Amino acid sequence: QVQLVESGGGLVQAGDSLRLSCAASGRTFSNYRMGWFRQAPGKEREFLAALNWSGGFTLYADSVKGRFTISRDNAKNTVYLQMNSLKPEDTAVYYCAARLVITREYDYWGQGTQVTVSS
Image (cartoon, rainbow, N blue to C red; front, side, top):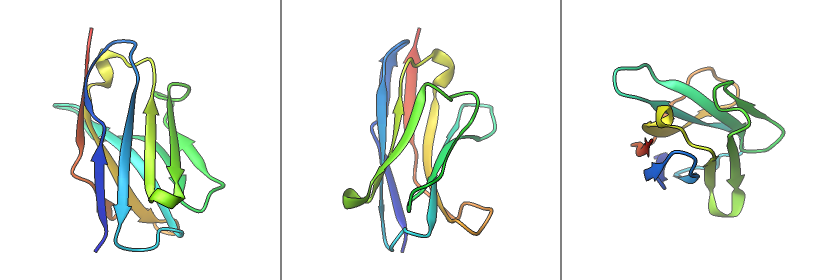
């Protein structure tokens, strides 16, 4: 059973940084792509960043390119999202997700972690 558990959210001020973590368990993820998404109230879910667990691939949405960085720690089976220069419009619930590299849809999702950025 795949389990993704996000942590690291909270209330910060504009300009601050946060690092979100996604602890993955339940299988070997070497053939998986891990992604970060967010959903603000009244808005659709938005893709932010992704990487292949085996390496060699990263992708960012234009809205966060240069401010957010996705990374992984293979030893800890954890994926991170470093978020810098946070803005009030970054306020959302942030989700970690996983899918096989060869598929199109993310099959596994975490429960989400709230990030609130005050002005």
